[in-house]
Length: 71
Ligand SMILES: [Zn+2]
Image (cartoon, rainbow, N blue to C red; front, side, top):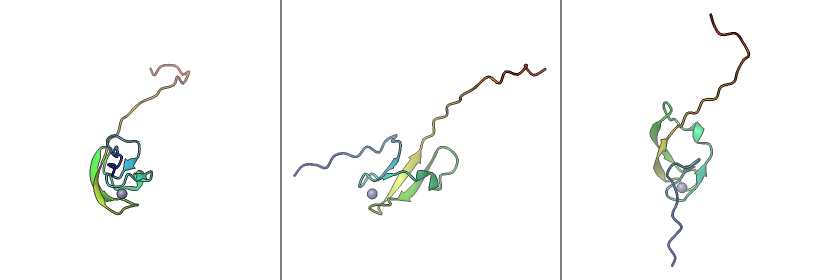
């Protein structure tokens, strides 16, 4: 019997269950505190509990406002 395909659970765009590979795209509903945090959560598909870490990368954008500089 072939081994099951390994599940990538590291720095993925969606929270990915390490047991069944279910991708949870409602992760913003989870009770993370602050930007970077680690919690325990339950898979919505296989109902196994697993640890989830949120890793946030910040980018900034700027645009000119065509105003005079502040005095
Ligand atoms: Zn699962």
